[in-house]
Length: 352
Image (tube, rainbow, N blue to C red):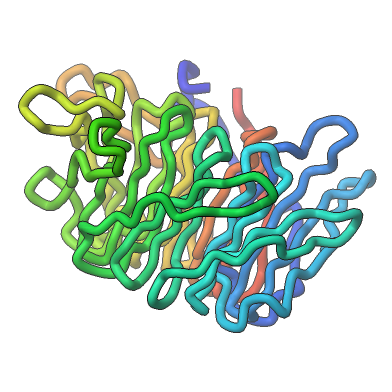
């Protein structure tokens, strides 16, 4: 897809399903990466201000049903959810300062571990590519890294201090044990394990002085190859960051390897809460203007360098769009979640 000229493509984003059941705003979505193939129906998790997590599954006829409601574990808003790479475990992060680990047993889900340690609201949870490490972040300004032990035990192996405000999201590089966090302090931090001291450290901070954001950074997403990432902010922009080398390495002058490539602005007029990069190279964004935008790289500008152009914009929900997530198995299917309490599934049509 990234090599196809989309300039003449007649694209449309068509709503194909609306999933209702949550009784409060829906904060986050996660596709189960082990589903969507023959014999394994596509599965989506959602979490909400109603303190529950819902599991949605596509039936043989193509319709979607809620197959499980995970409740009575968190006693405040569930802000974030993430499936392990093997699809067998689901991590959920809550404003009750805990992260729960769920495992499917038959048709039901059981909470097999509760991770405690953050002082207050946990805002985001993410698994590393191998499923051996879990990262969480919180309003307490810290990022914790947990190592999975036998028997679904989790040990905190690092507490990362560096952000000066609420940490909004953590995300692992798709192929390396490189962790990125974004914060209310307007910065993006890149963390790697320092083998010499057997600890994790911040190797790069992307802030306003490095062409970064001027307000809260809400979200980030990596390209499928891991050589670029996109961040979104309260400053109404998205920024594309590039790396010319292995992002787990630090250059001789002590600087990290990520640099600002370009800024996407002028398309949302309210804070941009979510961004997600499909494996076809299309960036989706969801914002407080109730809209979803899709962008793709435009490679024919030799003068100004790489840029990203708007493919389409749709009013997607009646209230803020909090999460947009491409289906990893079918990159033409996008899921969105909103303050209006609904989840929508969209199909991108008209691709060449």
